[in-house]
Length: 250
Image (cartoon, rainbow, N blue to C red; front, side, top):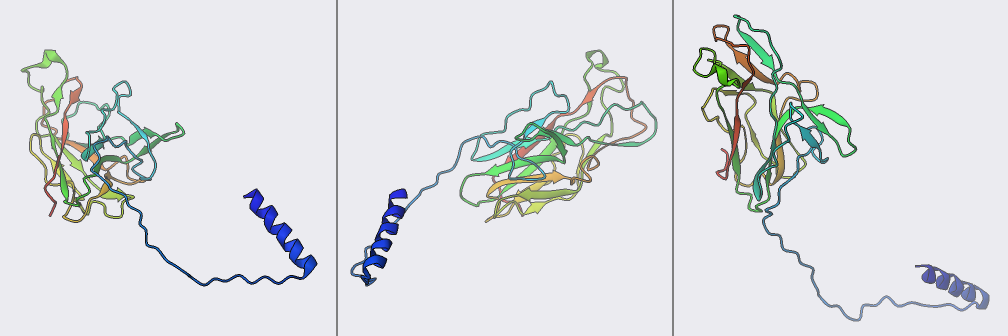
């Protein structure tokens, strides 16, 4: 680039000094057609989690118990990349009907800063077919983790339900998922309806279903426990099993 600049300056100086006029012809004397090409194939890679509030930025999510590592996402091309675990806190035993809110999702950004956002589930479709898909979930019973409670009343929180509310789709894709259920009620051991999905012609790239926003991130996933349910002084846990189908949503 430097040689071109110097040469042009020298030529201009010569033209000014000698007064020589130069004419450059722009007539096209020939043309030739060439082409560029690229081929895409479905990706089998694991897609890393991204920020539920800024879906162009990678993040490192944390479990409610930071000593438990986050399970990697499923491999592509149609994959569940991440799903939040829900922490409903430490509560006093009561005989009154109660609804408890799950804490917001914690994660670290690229700079290592700890942030919080909505609990969320992330799905990626890198099949390249725009064939659609559907995401569902099933929750198990909330059961005591104390082996000494086996067979006792209160081993399971009878009648407990989980509510996924304020659901919305977040994506940087031009053709993201286009179906979402605003409120999903989860009864134990019953497969849910489609929580997030894509109809035929949609769902390419990465789509997130956020439960809440930056202002409702800690009040959009709820656990309802009847007062009549027997409760033991114990930790209770349930398993959330998310399932992804290649059947288009409708």
